[in-house]
Image (cartoon, rainbow, N blue to C red; front, side, top):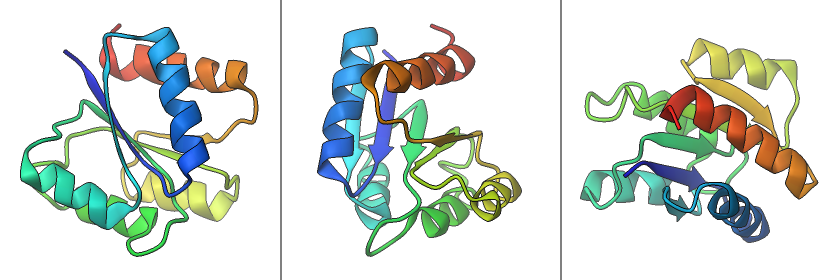
Length: 129
């Protein structure tokens, strides 16, 4: 069974993402964390072994840039595709994501149909569904 892990500090964004994901792909397991530190703890516990990670950039405690940098240095997790999923559309954030081997950069949408379109593109590209 495929699984997706969303790391995002915004509870509303997590809820909307989960709702969109489950309406499109009910068989995909979904996990979430509120920040990069919580995300690492879940990964290192072995309870979450995702096929794909969606990562917000702007979070407290451990932000997305730090998480991305660290995960790509970790032998256990470096091959998991990480999609930057953020409100930012700044070129500097896109450049950072590319330089640090993010698989894709998605600026968050504000309609459920557009979120679903972005999810479909990512799932088709990375999960072969």
